[in-house]
Length: 112
Length: 115
Image (cartoon, rainbow over all chains, first blue to last red; front, side):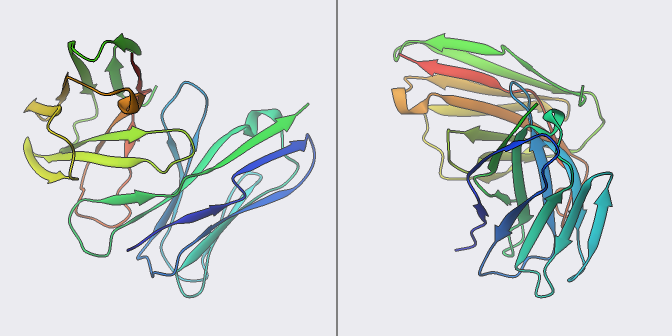
């Protein structure tokens, strides 16, 4: 069974700190996506990584896809209160069809 | 504003009630999805519709009944629910569900409480 495990489950940090959250699987994914979900809203796509070893940057957010395409990380530099939210990783099931599986998420709280 | 709207935003219902959730997408996408989001659990895919045809039913109990009259509208009819069905129900749409890494656009969700 393909699973995506995210860690940590919860993270509370001060404004200005750096942090890294992880998304791991024992299965290979053709791509992985990161979404952010703010309270009272649905998830919004941040990035899609496709190539093993790929690094993508989105302002203070850096996303990396593992060389073996089994894991991904999200690093936030100088976190701000606006970064608060639930960070979800997601990927397509290898069995084809129209299924995407999601991790349980990392809930980040950045204190001012 | 993601282009996907859901109504109602909040719903409280008894176990014997019948209610419906509505989703509308204004993005011209071909596929629509229902997900269930419970606390500390991954999003659970419930149903997928592609060009109005149901392509996935992820072993969802029959007390949840989807309806997709056209590519822009999706309903979830609820009947005889259980308290454990209380969750956030998210609707999403995408352009090409068969493509790996297809971006899904989510609505804000309906927070459902079953008493």
